[in-house]
Amino acid sequence: MTEATYNSMELMICLAARYLEDRATVVVGTGAPCAAAMVAQRVHSPNLITLFEAGGMDPILPTMPISVGDSRTFWQASMATTMDDIMSFCQKGVVDYTFLGGAQVDMYGNINSTMIGTDYIHPKVRLPGSGGANDLGSFCWRTMCITPHDKRRFVEKCDFVTTPGYLTGPGAREAAGLPPGTGPYKTITNLCVIGFDDETKRMKVESLHPGVTREQVAESTSFELLWAKNLKESHAPTKEELHVLRDEVDPHRYIIGR
Image 1 (cartoon, rainbow, N blue to C red):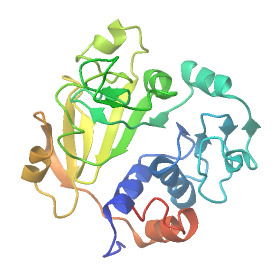
Image 2: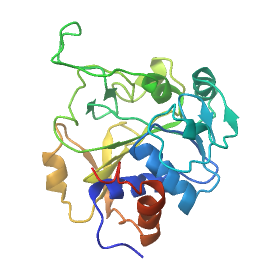
Image 3: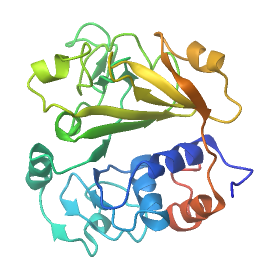
């Protein structure tokens, strides 16, 4: 049963959680991705294995950690290791999912979290940079993104490619030396869920959130989107998902209160 009242952040987190199947492996950061993994574990994927960049592997998260190095990311973990090992697991091809974000994303799922502008030395805005995002987006099998949807973020071409998506289209990722079969998977926004077309590798809208129109999505995007033939409506959060999210995962509303 669905809950009548929820906000856009709660919807995005619950939708993302549903893509994390039982016994999958996922590298998460803090914030919405971590909340999605925690909801998935508590609702339908009890054997989901979460990994954190600082080295925590498969912890039992009692509450929301405030950073990837928070001691809670090691609590009752299967392994307390290092960043080197986490990245090594990705390179070996044993990590199914990762969540990434940035200031810009283009039609091929390339992400910019480095700079805004055309001059790297003197940018309009200097952003935090990659951290481990390039490694994760290069080697994890499927990359997901939870992000607001607006024209400044969904751009025709990123000012800087921090993390490769499908680069310039079909075959470009493999030509760059990245593992075949890896790449962007789902982009979940406050308006819709976007996948990627198998042939063109371009963004394709798969479902619209309740009350959202195609025109709203198109007007919030700086490039032409593809649309699924069987375009659906996103399923609203269930009462169970919202109970877990609100009362167990984020009771202080650090994430869902935004």
